[in-house]
Amino acid sequence: MLKFIKGHMESIDGIEIYPIISLLIFFIFFAGLFWWVFTAKKDHIKEVSQIPLDNENETVL
Image (cartoon, rainbow, N blue to C red; front, top):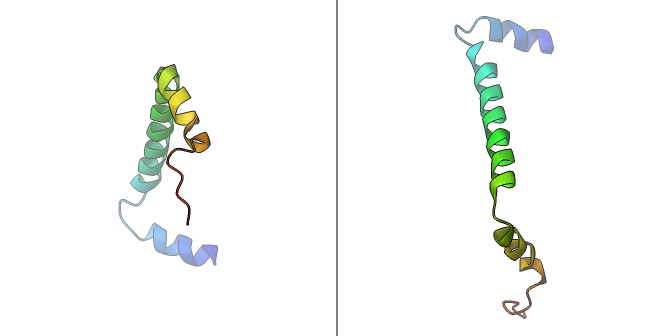
């Protein structure tokens, strides 16, 4: 099965750029997420962490 897929992939011109683009997107996303976590304001993190415990907006079905 892998030989079948690999044979088709080798016949496509310019296919080698897609894994590089995927790696860059992955790296940039997690680097941005890492940066956001360390620069987020502590008050915002506290407020968001209390949302699951907030009973004021709870609806009864």
